[in-house]
Length: 352
Image (cartoon, rainbow, N blue to C red; front, top):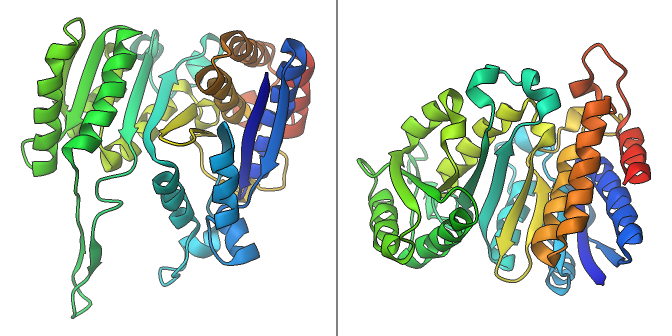
């Protein structure tokens, strides 16, 4: 099979971790008899520096022509520390989500047996955790009307959702739950927010179409608490943009490192696969960043975008082997030898 993949390395450690995912993907393709055509595009601060905008038209054309997008990270301190900046790397991410129709962020959270004691949570609380959070990506407060009043001292951000946006995400959640533990949790704040009441009403109306799925409805603050108390009680959770942004980062530490968690963003046009960590500019160019989340995102890409389950399993197997044998970067090494980012990538590719 020929796989046409857009490659958006982005900023900070993005290019370094993406390089390792490419090494592993190429090794898997060679092992299973596939051909990968990689096409690189600019995004984020790198794109602003080059052409003045964070998601150029040329990059969008590359993504639209691809079967899938493998994405690194975006962000740079010079924009974070300048509240007056008119153009920001994150604007490119929001523009890309809208342009590609990336409506659902798929965030798995699971534990690795060899690293379970690295988690800040007690072993007995997290053993058996295997949950997925579906975060809606194209609506909510991030895309609502915003501004300042004339006096400049009052700001506002508007949260807006349509029934169609909720239905689209919830349908994916129900279908995913049917392939797993048949439990779905709708996370909202329906006691306060009208948009949350729309979410709850819409999901309730869909329950009859999925009679085998047990559905619960929980307020976001309660879920934030339960994620650190009993994360293994959840299976599939669905929620809106802002709540999902916060909860997925909270859930990511359960595994013991944000550098281990992959994600996918399901798109109407082209789906995107990326690690959940940020650009980590402090580590850029030092060859110390953990590439495993990006490599596991490539595994999600092989399985989800191309239906290549054996290839995805091969990647997950070699990642588990690297963890078990201690071939890891400094964030996971403890008192043992720490491998460079590039050394981990070389080892993974050689052991596929």
